[in-house]
Amino acid sequence: QVQLVESGGDLVQAGGSLRLSCAASRSIFSFDRMAWYRQAPGNQREFVASITNSGSTYYADSVKGRFTISRDNAKNTVYLQMNSLKREDTGVYYCNTAPPSLQRGYWGQGTQVTVSS
Image (tube, rainbow, N blue to C red; front, top):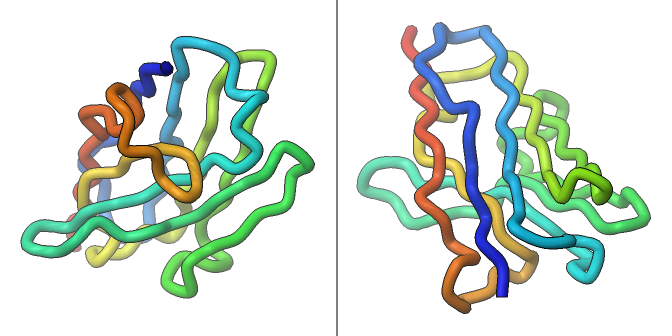
């Protein structure tokens, strides 16, 4: 079991940047693929980006070229660098494995990102 805690969300103007962090309560090395997801108001949770232990990354088309996912297994942390933010990036951002686990602790409280025009 693991607890995932997201942080780094904020209110930012369009065109700005944020760096999100996802801290795990134990080693994430056993999770080959970690990912970020987001949920906008009134929408379903959607995939944003994923990364494997070997560093292979995959992005949703909507964020490709603007967001960068990374992981530091030594710190049990996954990051999401978000640049050139758009209003449609607004939402609550979560991390989890990919595919996402439904076990307790994997879906945390998320971190709110609000992009204003």
